[in-house]
Length: 211
Image (cartoon, rainbow, N blue to C red):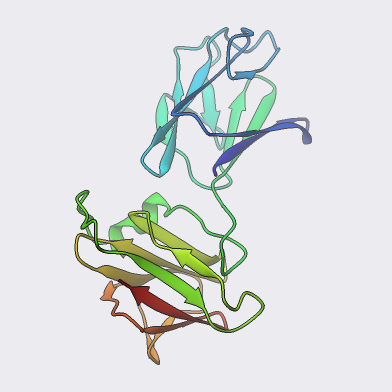
């Protein structure tokens, strides 16, 4: 679940899970995230869920909304982006726990070009999952229910599995440690997965299951 961490002078004030389609930020008490500071407008900005992305939108505030030091009116957020509103900062986190590696994260905009176009129409009979068969998480199974599921350790090894109408595809996203599919290295070009395929990534062995 994506979230924002409210900070003042580097000190964490509070964390907010982004569970609503639209989360408002501002000085007025009816906002979802209330920031009591005169530099903050009554209705300053909004965090909007768009598919698997979160978009920050400035609501014509007096002093503006900044992302990583640059003023913005509307833009998609990436993991670890810093939003500045008045004297306060909000750190955006999109990383979530995974049944295999410690983290699962949303595909970043600069890596989405490697993912194939996904159809929004799925076969109700098609199901897929990744089962861990080695390491501390042996036996755990991760259902592939999203259009794009990413897994791995940011900065070390991250791969993505894309769900299409009648198939699943895997490709390498980032990191020096590339994934291996049945003993063959997987690059940025998507490769179709078949039931029983073996995936090895960062020393962890997994099996793709489809039914």
